[in-house]
Every structure is written in C-alpha cells, then in structure tokens.
Amino acid sequence: MFREKINIGSGLDKIEGIITLELNNAKTGKLEQKITSKNFIAPPALRRHQWAQRNYFKNGIYTLQNDRDGDYQPASMFDTLYLSSSTQAEDPGNEYIVPGQIIGYATKSTYSGTSIYRGSPNGTASEGTTTYTKWVFNWPAIAANGTIGSVGWMGGLAHDSYTALSPLNGTATVADTWNTPGTWGYFAQAGTNQAFGVGAGSTGAADAGTTISVLNNEYALASTFVVSGNFTHVRGLAWDGANSRLWVIGRNNTNYFIAAYNASGTNTVTPVAIASRDYRTLAFDGTNLWSAVQSGNTVTMYRINPSDGNDVSNFSYTLSPAANTADLHAGLCWHPDRQQLWVRINTRRVTSNSANWHFPNGRLIGFDTAGNVTTGAVGLEAWLPAYTGTRVVRVGPQYYLTDFDYYDRDHFSLPSASTYASSTNVVTLLHPDSLGSRSLLPSTITKTDQQTLTVTYQINYPYPGSY
Image (cartoon, rainbow, N blue to C red; front, side, top):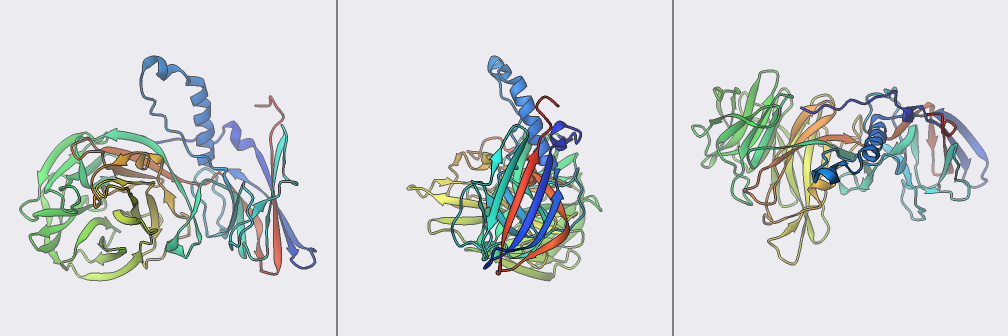
C-alpha cells in the first residue's frame, strides 16, 4: 500500500519565517506587549513543494502517452494565517494539522466585518521582494480574544454550526486510489494489508448484503464469506486489530445484533442482541462499539458494550444545512492515536429534479466520546478533496456513501460511491492535513477586547540561486 515519505531536508524547510505579535491598547494605540518567534515548515507544505517540482519536470509525458497521471496535487497550505491556543512542543516532521483551538485567523483578502475571529491584511505595510515576503495582519478589539500559543500558515478554513460558527480547520489530500471489485455498502480497513467490504443494498437503502469480501493490500478480492446465518442485512463493519476480528452490526429481520468473525469467516463472537434501532456504520474504540442512528437532521451516536449488547452512553449532534440542502451521516471510524470518533458527513444539494443530487465536498469531523467537536491535536474539520464533489452522482436522494476507516497515524481510506451502482468502487487514501507552518511562541500572549493585535510574518528566502 502507498506510504508517503517526506524529505525534511528539502530546500523549502530552510526558508526562515520571523513572526512578531504586538498587542496595542485599543484606545491609545500604545504598545503593551511584543513577542517574536520563528517557524518550521510542515510536511504538507513540503509535499506540495515536491509535487510542484515533479509536475513541472514531467509536464508533457502523459500527453504523449495519452495516459492518466495519478500524482495528485496537494492543496496549498499558505492561504490563511492562524492564531492557535496550542502550546504543544514542536514536532516538525510529524505535524499535519493545526493543533489547538483557533483563536483568530486572517486570509489574504481584506475583511471589515464583525467576526470575532477574523483579521485583515494591511496592504500598505505588507511587501514582497526576491529575498523576503512580509505579511502584516491586524485584528480589531472584538476579534482574536484569547490566549495564543502558536502562529502559522494553513490551508482551507471554514465556519460550521457544529461549533456555534467557530472556525474549523482542515483539508484532506488524496495520496492514492485503487479500483476495487465491488460497490460497497460498508467497509473496514484492517491495517495496511487487508480490508473488508460488504455489497451495497438497493439505492437509497441503508441495508447492505450478507456476503463479506476480503480484500488484499491492493484492494483486489482475496476471498469471501457469508454471514447470512446470523444476519438478513448488514449495517456496518469495524475491525478489532487487537483480537484480529471483524465486528458486524446488522439486523435479522426486525431484530438487531452484533457479532464478530475472523478473516476466514469463522464466527468468533456469537450474535449478541442490541436495542432495535436504525443503525448504520460501525466503529470500534478498543473496548466498545459505536454506531449511528439518523432521524432527520439529528444523528445519535450509541456506544455499545460488545459483551452484553447494552448501551454504555450516547450523544447527539444536529446537522444544520441551509434551506435547500441536507447533510447526511455517511461513515464512522475510531482514531486510536487521538482517541476520537471521526464522522463522515456528506453534504447534498437538490437540483430541479429531486432524483438528482449534487454531492459537494464531504467533511470529516472529529468528536470526543462525549460528543464535543474536538479541537486538540487534530483541528478539526477536514474538507474532503474535489473528487467527491466535482461529479454529479445520480443515485437518488437518500443514497449513503460508503463507510471509511482508520488506516494509520496520518491516513484514512475512504471508499467513494460510484456514479452508477454497477460501477467499480474506488478506494481513496486520504491524508488529512492543513498545516503549512507553525511557530511555537516562547510564551503565550493573551489578547482582550481592550486591545488590538498586529501580526507581522516575514519569510526570508536564501539569496536567489542559493538552492
């Protein structure tokens, strides 16, 4: 399977960024505090730099071959200046997503609204030369109030109702894709060498089949086994790596059960009855199972004890689309390193023909086990790349995109729905990332609504030709 390696010794990481934060009295303009630090360039930015080198050098080859280039373009990581609460130690080779909570941010476009987060670039003070670029941003008294521990550049950033319109950061870069021999209703990744899929039900139905496909490390079919002895319909799959077993949630006619199987299809945990609810998708957190039930715009996550099938806890979140849109719970997985549930949200927009739906970019949202949108080590809202949104998918108004699962520390695999149910599914390896650079301040700086803030970010380049 694809594993990306970043050469931290490339030229880009030698670029020096000097960050200066100045707190000024909002009434008098008098300087009250000043702090300076330096940045590091993060792996997502290095990856884009390396892609640009490859892309320009190989330009024209695939036109001559009339072939497809599978070298996916990483997103830009220098679109937004962010102010974060994070005081975590710098780890330049392993940081991909902005840590901490966003205190404030500014894009490169002038802003004059009333956001409590946004600043605006100072066009007069900003400048660029062959040896340095200097960006200067200003925040008014109402914005960026809080304790700032880190400053840097990042990729896309969005507002969302899940956190009361606070900004959520994140993008997800396509690392690789594979064609697979099925159209999956639900899917589970078992490390780097194996995956499991169950065929999708009819269009618009959460019910999937009862034949489990076992896929190898290139997502080719290795074997199959059936679970029809215990289930009439499968509603979700999750891999338990510690015990090398596949958990299945589903129904047997009107009753719901969980059960587990090894990779050969042997039933290792006999069916355990659970509450009868319209479950879909499944995740395993190392101890308990999680599954989602959606009713209108409300999704409830149930934590289930696999030993007795009893509910351990639950939390709900509300999908809040605009007037002519609806969000859809579409996938679920557990991120063991960060102790988070990652939820796959699919945003849909109806056209003039209600049988046709445009699927804009989906989202990955991180929740802690109490249902809080997590803002710790991961960010987070990760907007999925355009491969999920540039195509019109004609599958009816209730089609559920397939489940996704945790891959390794910094990757996720996501099976994407095909244009037609009979088409071959594609498994896409995603690398959630948003971080271009970060500078850990030597000490935190706390801004109040009695102060304004100026941040100067000067990037010094080696003299031309020094690479």
